[in-house]
Image (cartoon, rainbow, N blue to C red; front, side, top):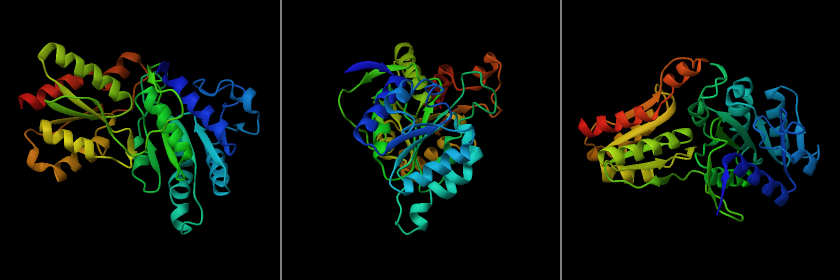
Length: 326
């Protein structure tokens, strides 16, 4: 398997699907001539032309409104939003149109739409461009939400999202594009809505996704070397549908859990996962379930302050030790 960056894995997935299916096209701000905000679609405009790589105005309503209409008549649009924060400008199109049209028309329409966007902090983009509001979109039935943490998962899940007949919000973390990992050769997909074990262990279960998978893996290695603590890490990968089976199986083995998310703790992904563990595996609880999350402040621009607000390896290590010692 080739070892490539997440940016390259996403580009491969897009190109392979565009070569495979002529109904797939890309639209968004600066996706064409410029090649995308993070260079994911660099070279696509020259290869596919303006009919399949469409630069749009700076208007999220127009991007998603046009993409929804195209999906309703048989195309497979990939609508890129520069950042998930801009999705708030088109919230009605995301949660009242894309997520509900199939249901409200009694199945007469399908919505094979992918909304590609970036989420998360760590790039000094300021409070309004650095949020991690993934849970907001996962709240709405009818919309699938995917957030990969590795290059292999990014490629496999994106190809599955493009082939899906339901609208999928595909969330890429802004700091993971240069992350490298092995990606299987050839055409392969990963089912949407399937969590996976990224690291086996026996002492504590960590449940996480996206950027926090990287942070949790580093914490697990540190705990293993320094204290002999073996952490099992479950990567959710999809937030809706949320696959709890691997989480529950791991928790029944370790009896302790730490949930690590970049978003704010209040009303977050961690709260949902924690609740489901308590509901479905209460008899296996040997310690209170710990949540590690971002400080509840608008994310600062200053780099030192920004990093102090975001969950770090030390926070995860402390969380694991707390549930073991407690």
